[in-house]
Length: 406
Image (cartoon, rainbow, N blue to C red; front, side, top):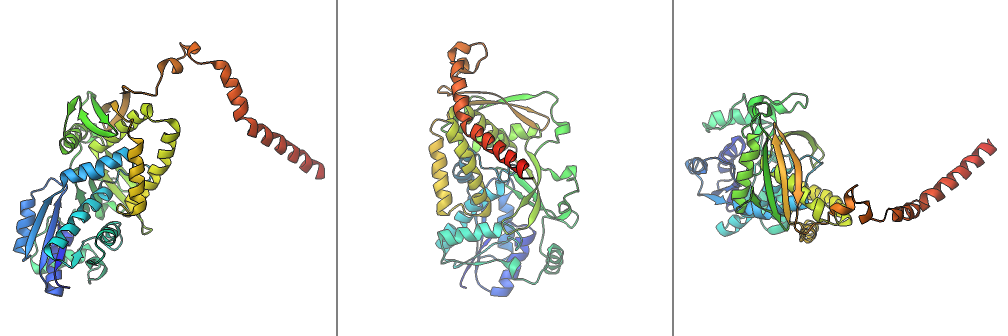
């Protein structure tokens, strides 16, 4: 080992990790912190790393890349893990990992160190990214090597080494924030029966305290990509920030779930994902009138597979790249507008329109029966039911034979 690049946030784990690495390996350390919209003063993080004796601290702005290359493709794909988790952390990790690897190669680092625990998903996501993009780089995961058994040990270590920390024993749960979401895990949340305390949420308004009047918001899409909010065209980061503000005000996007980690452990996570909750619903609404039925059904099945791959850390794997390209192909016709009603923690689709739509009001309406040939339905039903008729007759014959023999 000649030089280390440490994925550094300045939190409990990486603050202790930096000191531990210096003592154990005695090699130059480059601290790397990606700005993915975590809404904190990163100059403080940089100052803290420099004060701890790093050779260099890199703060890299990845917000635009995160939104355009990771969040928007996930929206186009309707990628949701286990029907509920919008994967704000799962999508951020490959973005950060790519930035880390590029920085490590540029700085001449032969080793990357991350602060993911040995029980979590992030260790897999970071390390699979390294194997896919720069397999010559060694990876060190202190949580799989050092002598500390848990966070209480880290608090004691930090006190002994006079390491300043942003968390306390009273609120030791882990937070991960970015432009897409804030996640909360560990500590008081590890009991899945315990309701998260009201003060845990840092972003969204408590739905009970949200405005008493609903708010309507429109989202315009071009080829599956959100381009405007309430008729105002915006760039990617600006658009996500705008919809985040609107949705958070109404308490939209809170999720409390127990998910299945890749390594086989069930984990309780609490999430706030205000803007993308609305964008995902709006996108599905526009798809409902612009996508062919069979394409839509096929996409639903593939979206589930893609979600599992993203969650498990295979963003840079060939099968994931192939599915993302296929998702892009489905979006060529997904151009239109959705209208969403926000009220007390709920976001409800109340309208959708598109200049080129597969929805024909005359075919669908009960007031225009002549626009469709109802008589054709009889033949369609007879044809569709042929196999059921054959199955029923055979089943009746078998049942009669069984009754005779008994």
